[in-house]
Length: 481
Ligand code: AMX
Image (cartoon, rainbow, N blue to C red; front, side, top):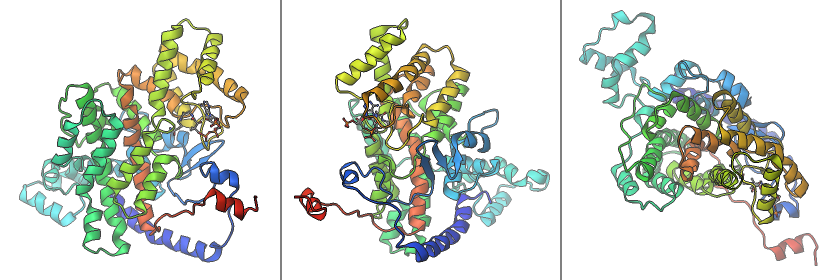
């Protein structure tokens, strides 16, 4: 089937059965320990969450349902004429655990017929001739009757769920220009709660076994609406409030987003397909994913929980780091100019550290090697912008920063993370507004968080409530006096 919801519905019972059997045998098996250091150390290394969509290996980096980034680049469908994976394909993979076909990905971007009887009735009403369509029956149906279908809400997927409620548009248009784009983004997402199908169904007493179905609908609605929200913020702040235009159901999610932002360059569309794919998910414990999961565990709907996740992404140690990196790179360029030497770079990095600041774009809570999300952006740059001076600076920093951070002694991972590279690529395609970069990250992260939230509901996970302790009680517990 090309209907994601049907494919998912078929997966859920087997997954529930498997976990039930596993837990019946191993519920009391010990899988980790908690030291005093971990209690004070941001719970680093405590195994305490089941997240199905991706797994982070400290040495190798992220794997989405078992596939590394290079494998995703090879195996996930790309757009016609393009080379980078479509984010829709990764969403399908994260939700179902299976690599989608091109038809499945297309159906997710564009929509598909979900009610065959209604569809055939419409064809009849609109006088379409079925006989001439041959083997490619369904895709021709979709093309020829696109107008009918999009205007009767038979299409169910991303291109047709993107409209915002008018109160959200009004709210966005009334925000002052000095409100950070991430604050605008989080607030607008939360305000879409008025549209939640889950909240409505819950208030009407829906059974627990059906929670996931409404959560699924909210997840797809939210993913579809994010580019519209993000583009309105961009246009209001940086393009005099010009209109974002209409969604084109023949374009994929990233291509529509880019054109709503007001860009045309097909290479920039390719970059955004890659960007929106690699920022989706980084297992469950990072601040944005965990905040979303935590809030969703109270049965708050997807808009409330994802809004919470975005408030976390807005922090400088998490998603805001890509903005911080650009500020840092510009400082280097302003102070040293393009003719810097590596020794001058080293000196600049030491000066940053000695003034008590971190080197943005370097380090990670879990990773212990160069982030493969950095590497694939570097490969993109080598292919498309090898002579760009800012790319050269990023490459030169890669030569000097790790050794300096190692010399500092305390940094557990001296290697670059995803944020060390993305800003330079965006600037190359003339997206200069670095305050905005985290919003792009936020559009992408929804794919991972929403796939996980659907599974949280399907598996009926409980409200999250880890135990905390006072220092006095902890001292007593370990016999410290
Ligand atoms: N520059 C300078 N010092 C750093 C550093 C860096 N890039 N990375 C870590 N350190 C320091 C920490 O501040 C800490 O110092 P302290 O003991 O004096 O407080 C010490 O090294 C040990 O930290 P750690 O265990 O290696 O890292 P962590 O798990 O506590 O934090 C992270 C991880 C990402 C917050 C940290 O590496 C950092 O601040 N990096 C710079 C900001 C950044 O790039 N964030 C983006 C991360 C990816 C993302 O979420 N988007």
